[in-house]
Image (cartoon, rainbow, N blue to C red; front, side, top):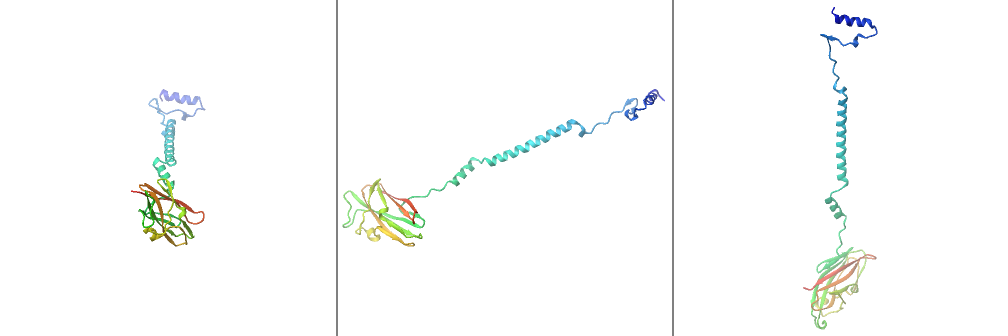
Length: 228
């Protein structure tokens, strides 16, 4: 028996409380290397795992925030489209020859406007001429309506002019008659003339009126004639 083994054996016998397994085996006089710890038992391994998880969670949270922001804050183009859709369309109230103004089934069609220099005993004053405006009124509402010539207010180049009631001697007036005062039952219609005496060389004739379609239901409209 060599000296090293003798010493180890004698030390074990000298201390009976010592567990022989506490001593590393001897390989050619040297201590055998200790076994390596598995990677998952290294403290720095779990630190790296924790850092990677935190980065992944942060990236996921950032993506959700960006998406929510884009939804809650629409682009300028979307905002313009929304405003355009919400803005109500302005109702037309100005009409010219050939056009029709209407209100709940009651229609006023501006059929024509004719300049007349007089005929037979119907002559305009010196320096003036007649403008004959023809309207066709149709009542397709459920109520009787009243069409009154006095409800038409005319202005020639911003100056008020009155309707000239003529019973004849002007071809269009003889053909259609004057609007005068007419009650129209539902489903009925009436064509009549409004005749205005205006200065020669006039520029624009405006005729303002209300289209009544029953109680508390009227619409203000304007008919315009321009002198070419």
